[in-house]
Length: 415
Image (cartoon, rainbow, N blue to C red; front, side, top):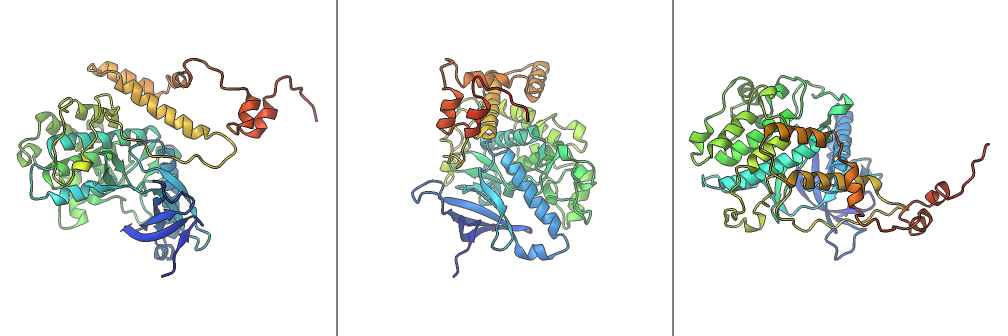
């Protein structure tokens, strides 16, 4: 069998997943050390046969959009880390290389215990839902909507961190992009699609919250809230039918959780929770303090990480190792995203805010980024000297040109 190298760097090993648009391969990063944890990666590619169809240009745009969204979410713990994306010169197919996740999807969790109504337990559902909401809050803060959240697109990794997968249908709100395929069919899996998506109406982040409600409902009951013999029948139920009574299908569900899921499944986006951050807070208020989560046989290594009420995790697994990019200077934008993400988690995790008015003010203040200058000071609280610009340029922390541009006593010249 002829080995295939993608992008001159990633050697494909075997396919591990496939959808209508593309295929994901386990691969080896030839530039990583053989004993490195970064050696194994996942490489997503568009199926070559899809590029022969009438919508090939649209598929390439979707793939490129996914790469752009994932790059912007690269610093967040609830999304896979991106290694490289581009077009393979050998065959012209786009690809996206990501960290290889050691985990199992929520669909696998539901399927394995389909006959056990007590698994996943309520505490698992709360923590999984809170992590999903945390990831959606990060995406929405960057004006990105997932539009296809479902159990197969969420993975519980070894160590208990939930990862949101596959932004292939995602959109940026601030770019005026259309919401529908050229055929007029709404994107997304119909069992988890918000009513406004079915109607081809303008989609907001609230559509992701509706999908989250569907996922939580299925985690609790092993069934999505709406089912039917055809996609059209399911879509019509999303628009006009009331979901089954959650409290009757899963009697041990706390009333507050039943109310929250009902709000998430509201037909009108205006009747759903205001944002994903509030959903996360509402879920964590239902958590039972520091009590250990239920032990699930065979899934002990995947027990969800318990988070604090403010959103910051109570337990912090070792962060994935990241290789510094080969360049002449500092990754300023990557550092900026990391500081913002960690500072927001610190700010929100410092206290529990019960007053909704105060909570809303803090959320708006964080969204407005009025506090963002503060963490730059906390990077160097003692104000110790980091070296001159010339010294930093010599160490290749700054680009060599900085030594010339910012030199002391430079004179202006006119050309």
